[in-house]
Amino acid sequence: MTPEISSTALPSFQVRLATVEDTHAWGARLGALLTAGDLLVLTGDLGAGKTTLVQGIAEGVGVRGPITSPTYVIARVHASLVEGPDLVHVDAYRLAGFAELDDLDLDASLEDSVTVVEWGHGVAELLSEDYLEVTLRGYETRTVDLVGHGARWSGPGVREALHRLVSLA
Image (tube, rainbow, N blue to C red; front, top):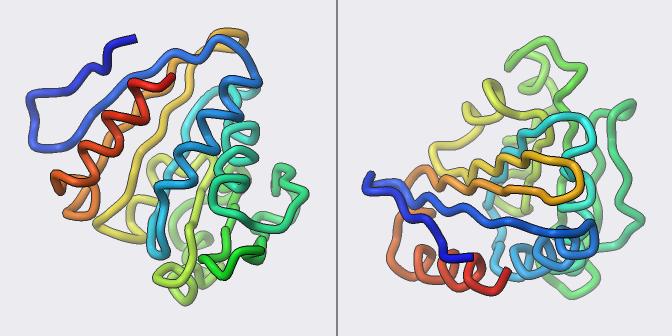
């Protein structure tokens, strides 16, 4: 699929993934692009593939698994296996708002880790000016919308890397 790039200043892309395996593999390629300090805010209906995507991201970042939904523990830290950043995987579904998310002290590890917040729309954006908003739709074939916010995601190198990532899907 040809990437759709918005005319706004924010990089915006869309990709379609035909299978669960494609979602995982594409997540691994996305994870390989991520660096310490990156924040991803994942949104999507139940069963849209958020945790599958995070499993792929974890593979690409190179962290210890297994990666499961942190619904009941709220947050898990997965240590790096490759001397890279740890992965902080958060599920904000049960949180009542930013105050409860802030209580997790994610800002203490935000600069040193890749942080992924499932169900984070409306709360996790307050953690940083720089974040990648990832919205998943569909159950079998998934549509993934990516919108970068802040200087980290609007630089030409990152735009080109995201463009290549979307083109590979």
